[in-house]
Image (cartoon, rainbow, N blue to C red):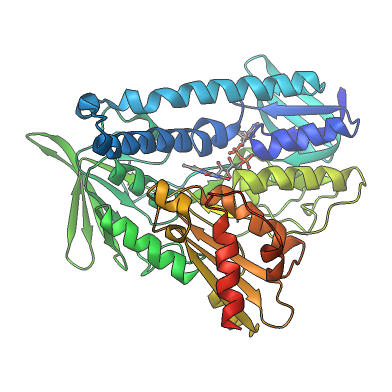
Length: 461
Ligand SMILES: Cc1cc2nc3c(=O)[nH]c(=O)nc-3n(C[C@H](O)[C@H](O)[C@H](O)COP(=O)(O)OP(=O)(O)OC[C@H]3O[C@@H](n4cnc5c(N)ncnc54)[C@H](O)[C@@H]3O)c2cc1C
């Protein structure tokens, strides 16, 4: 029986970072991956494909806007979906090559096949070559998640798609609709709208993305409506059917309110389910929650000693960024190494415009009775915002009135997923808002908004 110090199940971001961390600590590491492709949902169907597609669409939008300086892209109308999807294949291939190269360089053994527990410290790997059992001192479960496909919806992966099959679109739909106003639903609704088609977004909740600060959410909803997104909120879907029409098949959603939505293509973005069924967790006594998530303690250890679980398989926040972080932390703990202190984590939602946040929202400060003040800057107040035509972007700083330390940073506008990191450092170092006035910012930049927001906030005290 081959023995490893650390066996990782899954080569998505949670698994690949756990494996590399293990190798850096000098452990003998094996990664079991059932798919022929590396990188998990992040590389194959989630983060990278959707963000590459979004980038291509943003470039198209920029070309349209450039008409005022005489750049006319007359062929835009004849663009097919392959033109949009093309760049994503290159990004996926390059990223897989990189992961494979990292594994090779760090001596991580890649073991193809589907893993399950054969007992404490024993993993069974089933592949085309048969079954093999390995012994592992420590195990990290990083098996990720897949789209939730509600049984009462007739998903056919052509007219009614999930976030995996939407990537196989054969043409830009003339009338798309999205069921579900979470992060993935909002991101795809914005991409469709940016292509110039009318899109309907249906959600049973009265508000989208409730974790966002109210001011940022308000600005986002305004932008989405202005892009032509029809928001059908607080609407319960009663039934969805695929019907044949002389122009082809289409989906029809009947809502409890009596309204109906017809769409040439409908994306069902109804959340994600953890990949745990094949693991035979009962062989090692690992429990799952009602929604199928693996239960872990503070250091990501499961109920079975020496077995950790990280990434989407344990649920919120279920991001590639946090999955990688959790993978590293779990292995540090498994190896008895000290872990870095807990930090505030940034969140980005790649809507158009994108939004990003770190720390507390204004509503959370009110609920927790924290004495706070806010400072706001519009991108339009910076020359860079005016130059790049992004005048509606906004930065909102939240800081304590007593210690003046920054406790929340919220952004909407171009590049906000990048700009947020400066705020993240302020928060994690417990810097006072005054620190922003002590710094010189490049000019002209959007980052100057930090200084303007700080001045605004201090003036309100
Ligand atoms: C459309 C979409 C957009 C997204 N956008 C973003 C974004 O912009 N930013 C961001 O941070 N996150 C984003 N995410 C989330 C991100 O993709 C996930 O959080 C991340 O991929 C989770 O990583 P993971 O390693 O836990 O799981 P996964 O990436 O799902 O990888 C799990 C791996 O485990 C393998 N596996 C499963 N079971 C077994 C088994 N029994 N044996 C062997 N191998 C197994 C799978 O084949 C897979 O390779 C997005 C997700 C989606 C769907």
